[in-house]
Length: 244
Image (tube, rainbow, N blue to C red):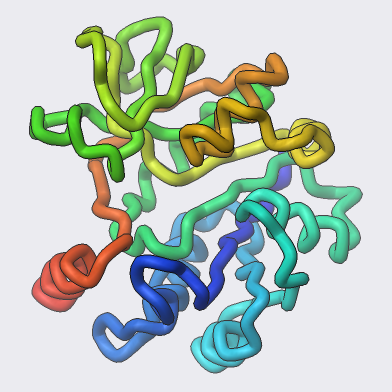
């Protein structure tokens, strides 16, 4: 099966404007994510963006990027526009990788792709064990509840995605911002209206569950920090610049 990785990215993030072009080790965050996706070596990688500055930056760093409309409500709509612009007849799976998670583990990206192929799943994502209990109450950290306990081999279904843990359950994990769709499922997903559940919780994956699209979850080795604030960015910059 052939996989295409698309990374949606835009400059107008409300909490940290200009986020994708902030530099780590002299390279923008979006180009760091692009290089990480390429290292996973599971298929072609393209950045989907409404901003010419991001296109220029990605191309300057040896990557591919496609300009999209500014009117998209979600990143998924943005990646679908790119899919439509390409001759995608030979693509089976589309992976949506977030442009603000430069610490995403390459093995985790590969594992999600392998699980999708092995299980012929419609839609898959990743989640990590919650080691710090304070994350249960942190509404910026999205949690997923799974039907079974996650281990390194299984790929159980998600029951729900939440921001705040009301009732403790043993199968609650930290959801990571990565999705892998069968191409037809992505086409179905973007044809549905945003569901009330999705709008209320600001979680677009709830649109899938509300329309009976099953989401399977693989266990991630690590729990990368996404960049939402200046503090997040400085923490990631420190880790990545120290590693290099």
